[in-house]
Image (cartoon, rainbow, N blue to C red):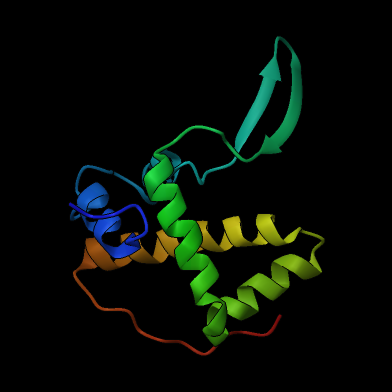
Length: 121
């Protein structure tokens, strides 16, 4: 059995081949990385990080995002989030969500990760 600190094993056990998730948004929501809107009656209070989701998968993706800060592409994405006024934790959560998209595409297409040079915007 995988320990809680073993992100690749948690990903494989939890996500599998990703066929149980129709879209990347479903996987992100399951992981607790999709923003949710807080509303009550006719009042909408904006988007915030959800408290729910699979906490083991969310933690694995968060640790993965933290470790990915050494990758130039991931660092560029993180720095762009920080430049837009996001806190360190918010930027890491956005990077984790971005990495879920990459992971989902790799599993869906049966491909390996292809390093791409970051676009500077």
